[in-house]
Length: 193
Image 1 (cartoon, rainbow, N blue to C red):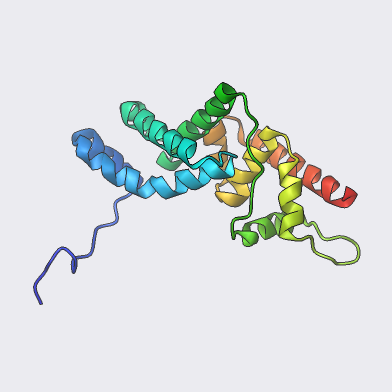
Image 2: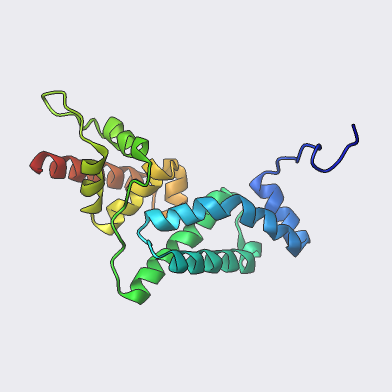
């Protein structure tokens, strides 16, 4: 059988390799776009931008800023944290400019992510009844933006404390504190309702 491009294994490049390749050849940026397009679009949506056209515009702006500032990327950080920081800043700026509040986080077939919050926060009442995903969705929707951001990064984007620290540019201890407070606020809301 002939060795065609379809039959060859595509080498799996690390993010660092993709950055290095892009700095050498600007056309290699397409590989970064390919790798991060879906996760960043999902992140934009999870942080509250439900308008598909606005989300696409934000995504494009994120990639433009990433490309323009690629030489400023600090290789001691994870690239994913760096690009998520750009995304986070663009999303916050978008809501500030639009003077709008982000939409409530929705499940969109991702009930298991809401269940992760339940498991991590030990949100089981005395009668051993578990809260449902819609109940947790409403509770997360009631959080202040800073707590919702941290819950999205931890439980929906499944970022580590170190990555969240890099993305939000806050100390890891503050990340832990914000996550703990957010879980308490979710628990209080659930117990009231």
